[in-house]
Length: 205
Image (cartoon, rainbow, N blue to C red; front, side):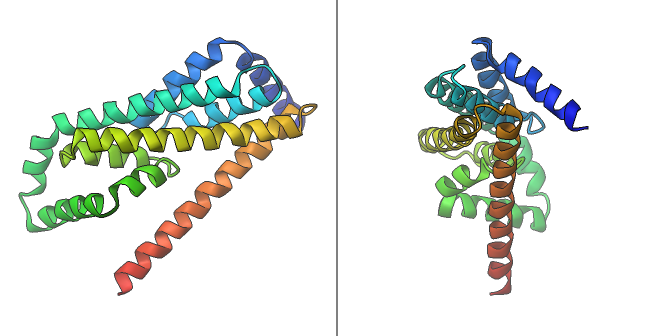
């Protein structure tokens, strides 16, 4: 089993060493905002590990990841905006739906910027929030500003996580990949636990 994993990561290392991997990172990061099943964070981390080994530029990995995330977020926002009238009309048919929609708008107004940043670290969160921003017709200029900040923070974090692993274990890429993935997964779990605890505390008040 370990031999299979090692072979897989060796193949991944060879594939990620190509300059075309920058394009792959950009495209996957774009798609991930619209289709949350696409593993963009994984690709950015792989790019970071490869950059740590000296085969790619960490600056370009960060730029491609952030650029793709920004484009994808705006696509998701525009999709939500286009469907806004239909969604609002459907949700406001019932009192419960109208309250839920009003609550979403309130949450976005209260801490929308922070939500856009933290949502990037929650699987599916970025898609749900960017769509919601479009559906509730949040100002485009406001959305773009926070989307830029969120994309840069996310891409820098994922890239450097891989980069540090690649530098620390330059002679063992399998270990570098696994440690970087485990670290990213751990951070995601911590953020989700904190979010659930805060949500529970709010409901108990």
